[in-house]
Image 1 (cartoon, one colour):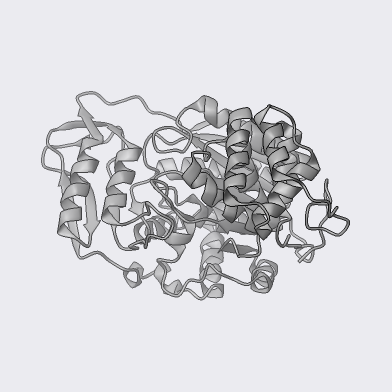
Image 2 (image 1 turned 45 degrees about the vertical axis):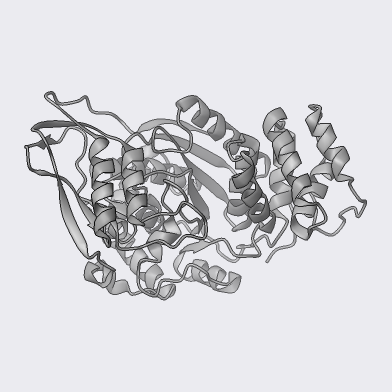
Length: 454
């Protein structure tokens, strides 16, 4: 645990002013389009943490921010205050450069599972604070917890020791990391203020930067299966994230990636773990590895572990071909209490009662697989959540999903549906089939990588 340092002293550090900030004055200032002072923002975050602001006052300011926006300096101040509402982890004893990665969420996005050990195998420490799935987007923690015994809730001491020992940890946000974010996010979720970019920035970065990383690579997705539906929104978010992180002394780069179709051939939790292991064994689907290498290259470049993109690519490929990345993954599973035999025996994972093919009604070439349709099908099966408190079924989902450009014959499987309920099986099959288009021509190939910022 560190003493607060950085561009601001923060609301909970020594030297903080104890003067009371009247909530209604702060709300009115932002309502009228004014700029909030650091003291205003500190008071707001403190009020979310200690209950001195009522929920209706917090919600009112969240709405005012959503409607009137925030300047860069306001957003930096908000991120800093939220980060310092709890513990800021210090990893100075880890001599290797440290980099985290964050995805804004997608369908079939299991990339953190194999990317983190690939980067760690290149001599870079990866202290990764991950999240759970909600709505149509999957969560890294849910996937990891499908491995028997795997613990995502490490203590800070365990987390620091594991990073120092093996250079890798994939964990959840503890109650002491950015606690103000949990309160404010819960209110945003029910007040129509989730889409506000300054609030998104502060939410993402306060948790990530409290985890002890030196720098950050962001996978900012856009498309049907992403939170940001169009490129303009994604670019605005990516620009804000990299700018705010840089202002806080943490270099960041953002890779804009397309999320029109699911990544890879699986959607689910245990099923995606199996696919991530295939990636580590050098047999990953082309689309997954395209995004994996693009992010990994930026992680190595940002930490100066590689001299250029070509050098970074060679190092990542060597980590796969040598087995070093797979060994890192094995060691991480063992360190976090999981059954590492999953690497060679996927049967240790939960399996569904029903596994049924989804048959193509016609012959031709797959033109399109709607990511949102696949997500809705998986959600109907129980692979995700509609509310934060929902339980996830690790066994259910979609496997061997057809990809755009693939030739398909009538009656051949477009996918296999894994279900624990026959009614859900039927409904999920209908949802997925409605999202797959077949045509007579091979569609043009599409790159998933749009651009890199930062």
